[in-house]
Length: 296
Figure (cartoon, rainbow, N blue to C red):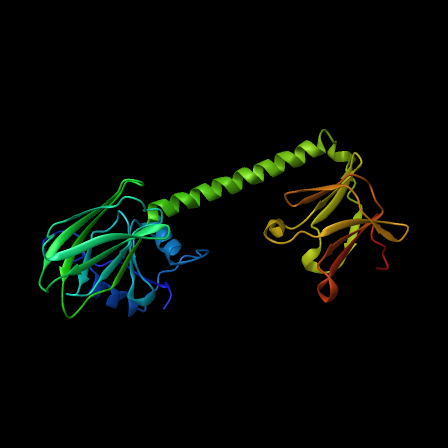
């Protein structure tokens, strides 16, 4: 079962403190028919982070092999472990190096941090049931501090616990959006720099084209000795076609630049071709200068 199930975190208010019982919560989430989704999110962590940004509520994710993913900084998990069994707590990616463990009961509980790739894993084992204590995990490298309540129960336990960071993920969303906007502005500025002081009235839009719809340009125009071929905006997400000018019935290489979604050709032409793929998968769009014949 992949991380596709998300439900609102449960609050156990026996003492007025916020806590989550891992065994009960996993059962609640994995059997829930109410799924929280976010259009465009690629995985459960992104969906949960988007929900947190919108509502302030950070859900807990039911993951693979009984793992629960808690929201770092937004929850105080109560972890159920079984006597003589190991509970695994996986920290956030990047939480490596020196990891300090401070456990309330170091006699009846065993806790140890071990490296695991780009993160650290805390393994915990109680010696008998009916125990209650707490654990503080601090990572000097990142400044992350985890506060956990530990309970030992011989009948129930969740073997794997993990964390995701909704605040960091939402921040990464903002950074990606800003980078995309900056890239779009730069592409626009580059195009303006190429156009220079061309008078819009001097631009020639008398071009037409034929070929598969997926490869057709949006518009073609020329000015000051350049031809500008505007392709669909999603060009940056797929392979760009090659461009050839047709002279004397033969395809000739020409100088051009690909700026954003524009091909900027350094010469005027009467005919050119956009080519993508080879063999049976080859796609060709032919661009003609002039007005489209009325009989076409």
